[in-house]
Length: 507
Ligand SMILES: Cc1ncc(COP(=O)(O)O)c(C=O)c1O
Image 1: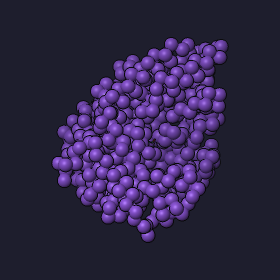
Image 2 (image 1 turned 180 degrees about the horizontal axis):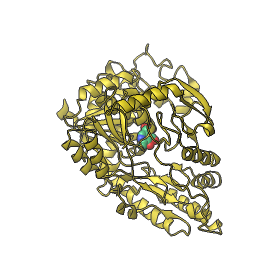
Image 3 (image 1 turned 60 degrees about the vertical axis):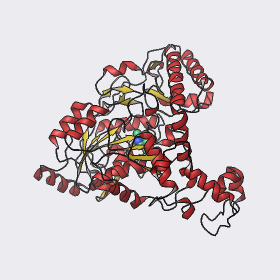
Image 4 (image 1 turned 120 degrees about the vertical axis):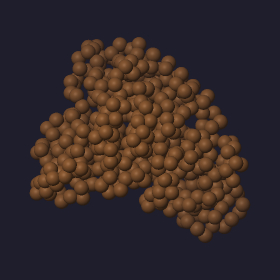
């Protein structure tokens, strides 16, 4: 079957859905809206054609838990496109792919080397698997106030110090588009016999233009989780997990996926992965290179505006920044005397522009498949007007660095399941957190479960709150209260660490 399937113009899932919905079959199966008839308002909203293909697993359509026909063929086509041995379609986002990667290589108590600026889904994977993170520190750009990549030296040091670690986890590229020296790190990890797992949530487009950072599969990584929905053109929530090589057992990956994967996947999402893969295979190089060129032009125009600085190639001279993706346009607005959050709000309210995210100093706009000169001109003009209206330039609103990475006292899983009490965040200095805190987006925890809360973190979170950033992670939706460990439990855990050299340590 494989040989006939390597025809990238085929659409196995989409065609199976079309055949089923056109052949006059009367349905006595779920979903209960019976292809739209049972919910006219929903049908009106989404369209009759869409609801006709809102089906789930059955013989004609294969089964995601054990694909043998159309899903298998579509996954094989995706694997071939990305240069992987196996591809797994995901309908619960890359979050689920990241959790599956970690659970495929780590059992409870196993160590994993992971940058501390990993997305919350990776911390979730660590809690679920019971793995113990060996956090490595990413390089920090103090001017931009953002975490960059990790250096091969940092990874090498962690591998030497923790030869028992089961895997190395990397982000390629970061939300802000920064890529570490992936190929070198993969070679290094492989020399230690360790698989490399890559969060490629922001990298579904990388392999289609050689000017972009190298993709995980091209660099020889063992697993990568890729948000096709973010930059590959499929529907929200649809992603892919890619696998290659012998260091990770694909049967284990499949078994792990089947632990938490829905048994009723949306075929609308699956078909969108199929169609996105076909588009990328047939036109990816042309489309992505157009977007790349468009981004270069937009960056140049934005950089001409007094008071703005667009992060560009100059960051490549810094450690931890081996390559960068110019389609992620990071505009530093520090010199306008405004925070990134404020500029995001002005763009939204006054100019009807919604960017991807902002932080204290920057605004991130993503350029992707649907963009053109017109959409980018609107963005550039809005930034120009905002900057021109700021008469006084170079009066910075904030001068605060990112808080230092806090001490990890016990593992995230131990903290998550520990006995806890809830206290005001402002009074939590010195306590051990049982929760995460993050601004969303980007969803990178400022504090993780198991870490000691510092005054610096509390102050930083308070500034984010003042700036109306979307804060998340605690049970308290306002993040004014936090769950911390009851003292005696923390003490017992600490004693354990002191007695056991193999326990959790940050390097
Ligand atoms: C770096 C990173 N990893 C993982 C994810 C999770 O991806 P998804 O939203 O597809 O679950 C995100 C989402 O924003 C992300 O930014």
